[in-house]
Length: 121
Image (tube, rainbow, N blue to C red):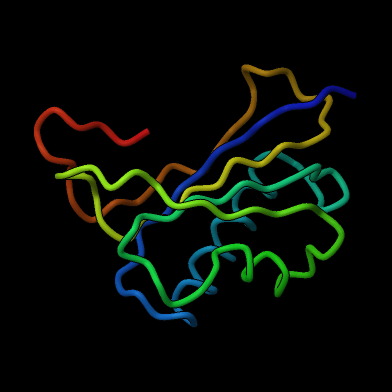
């Protein structure tokens, strides 16, 4: 079994705790399902959020999904002019036999396009 990383992102429509919980929960569920993973396969989850999100910690959604024995951390994204607003990103470290090239992250559904010269990461 190897250590693998899978990332995903979601852009929230609004900064509300319930909305964040719903959207981040859906993102985590999609990452697990698309990669054939279970919560027992998770090593750690690293969340980042854009500076305009204040209503809750993205990691709270993971706890409400029952991910209770996995280390979680939240950090703030850089405040870059022209960056997409209200974005939560996650980097999931997992144990998996799946080859690196077969990892599948959920494609982000962003409502807008980044400003010229800025690309989502």
